[in-house]
Image (cartoon, rainbow, N blue to C red; front, top):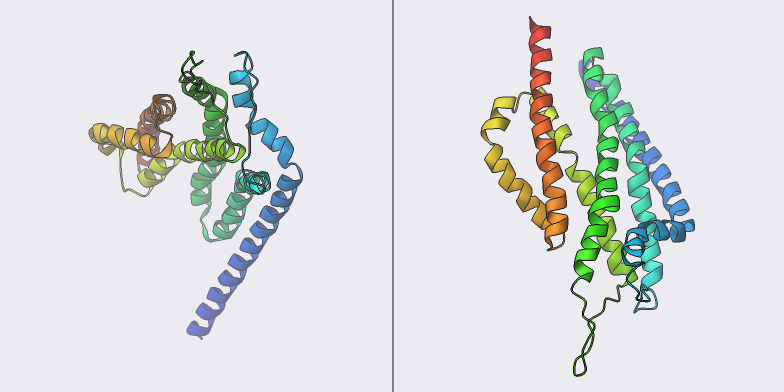
Length: 255
């Protein structure tokens, strides 16, 4: 009888998991379709940092494509990007609905702030690259253009549609995911894997890891690398403070 009830419980969990996955896929597919319909509008939004960075340089700028299918593939990428970016909160809600019934009230109360903070921090990371770091990086790269003299040819940027949009979409995700550092460290602290003293004592190692990650996730230029590394260092220090607060609250509850 016990085995039958356990088997029934396992099957019901699988059924619920399948239902949540199907809901997520339906929402993601719907957002993908709308993303493709409005791909040109999203494209104009994503290309705005480049347009603003070059509008006053006196050169007739454009984005080019060198393959017949390049713009079509780019629009598909934009739709996929929109589905991931806008669908992430929906996926988190579906995960919460699957996990929440098995949690105690105090566990739900502890996890809910992380669920809310995750998309907010991702959005902040995306905004940082879009509004601040990307325009500075574009101006840095454009500084290598040359006018050309009598016996030389000018060096001038003609950015490709696919390459530019792949770059900015990759950077938005890189910054957004990197900004999840406080969430990750706080969750590890809650389950007892790390504590504030551990983070303090290993600060120098984390600084090296942060700069190494920034070098891997960003183009090989100092602007985007420093633009990612410095916010992560700040977030690391804030994580130490938040872990301290978590430890104090836990000690109060145990007292």
